[in-house]
Length: 297
Image 1: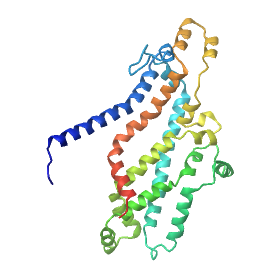
Image 2: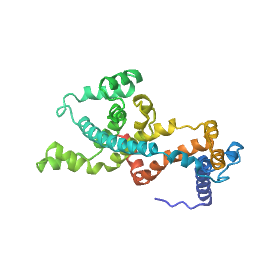
Image 3: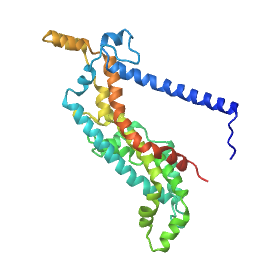
Image 4: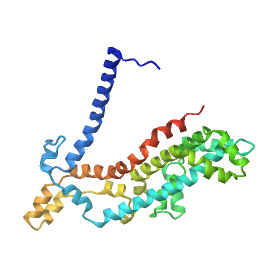
């Protein structure tokens, strides 16, 4: 490998780094602005005086979100939903993907199942038929209505399937020679070698389950059973009612510090914080898992 250290090469590399840094800052600036708005007073927000630093610092928006117990109930429901959905997704996706990598002699109906998966990925029954199925199964107002309709993410199946096909066949052959059963090969050979791809589909499952608010609006009619995103989406404040019901000047002062823009910004910040805490632990696997699972030699 030739180490090219010419002046033109260094200039081009410097320009690329500069462009990447500028693009990164441009991506971060809106997020920083949203955080600043969530901590700013309503007068400054309404007057568009908030940039990258909070103006008239206040925590009223966050106090409004956190002041009642429903927030914590919804938070707990979302955590349970993420964990249960993750376990179900992995338990269904990994064996299905492994089965799809078998030969026709080992799995006679492989092509039929594969065609069904592709068809289901491209077409679905739609919102109303899905709602009818969920209703007829008596799953409305339960956490299972939020989990079971997406229990088998087909894109994750295809990602895992292509990753499994990229593993050396000699590993499985050696395990079979040693007397391992197909289940033992899957659990003790294939799965340990597939951590990047498993981490990738796990991240997809976590992000999808946590960010989904529409499912709660469709399948959950009781506010106390809302997941966190549905609760935050439906959370609103009527300033006029608060002003009319204010008993003293301190209440009026607190109300004046809050507006819908503050509250919406706080919603976004609260929504992304759990994902920002999880992502650093899985991001090192994400790129490798995506590339190795999406490309088949």
